Length: 75
Image (cartoon, rainbow, N blue to C red; front, side):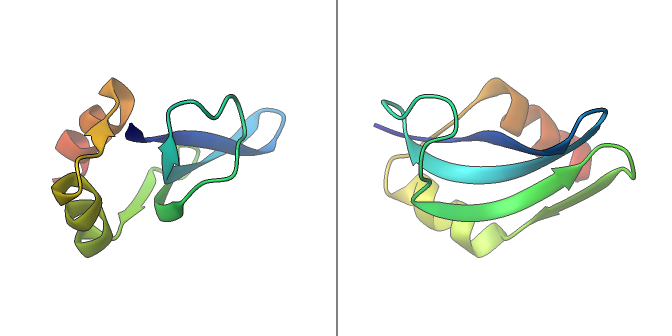
């Protein structure tokens, strides 16, 4: 099953998260199928490509709790 979740990048104390579509069996920092957007909490920047997100959800991808909370916050 494909999940849309956060993948942490960045350095210590300066997190940067990519919102990625990835197979749920990939652990940790596996290779994502596609990068859907990003979130930079230090600057309160959230950018999500809505077309890519809708396409993955239409294919059956599930959103994690963190990503669904970010979507509600960004609207």
